[in-house]
Length: 328
Image (cartoon, rainbow, N blue to C red; front, side, top):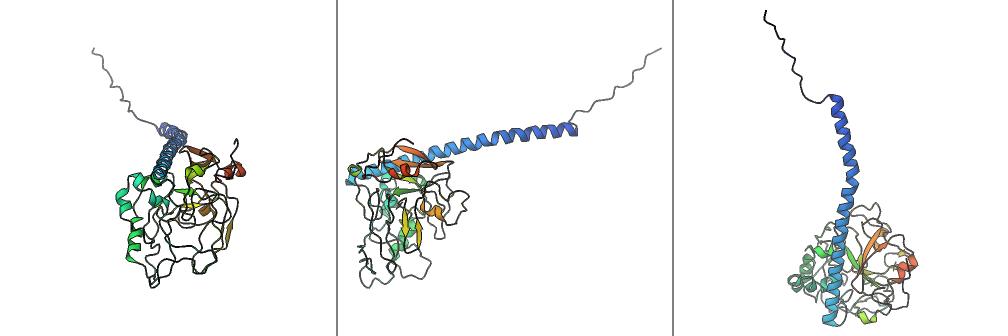
């Protein structure tokens, strides 16, 4: 009698619902564990790029200094500023035909040739201002509109990759770095017809028509800030403004009625919204966790903590007053 064999039921391969849910949960846990490490690696790379930007800027400023025996002025103003005068500017000549307010290019324009941007620099007409409001009813010279449009050029060395960059409504490109305007309670030019300018403070490295030399840094080039991060969204690299190319850590804006004193690193930078204004407009700061990068006058780069003692922090900004920063 022949034995009969019954077919063995075929076992289907695959996950049960419970197994699938377990696998998904494991993958989600792994992603949650790895994401902070990935973000930290990205931020570390961005910080390295920011440090390299500051090194390029510091080197460009040193090369400019070697060629011109001084650093570029914070603002290369062609006008004569008269303390206490309601007319405040002597340039442009009578009959020019528009209100005498606006911006002149600052030091970031001056060092373009040292950053391999000579073709862009050569397009500027340095006898004219920047038409910072070309879409408003002002009678501006065509060369000013031309100068302002050049500010739409993105300069990689001027932008920290951690910054939240955007072009403003006039199309000007952002910049993340500004100069040391000293430790003071003023240091700006008021607009014509506004409250007269406060006295020019010269404790830092940049001011209006400044001519600072490195040999003037008597506190030591390794103890004095040259340039630092100011990663305020929408800050145009081309303009000087009252807080764009240089500013001090103590500021008073009489024409705005706004008095800022004691502004440590990153004041107002937390939870900032792009396009918003606030106290962050006037402080050095960055979107790096815990502080900001600064180029010292010797070309070295230091990361200064937002929690450092404010008196010590201020010592970095006065370059010839004997306030040498101690241990921190």
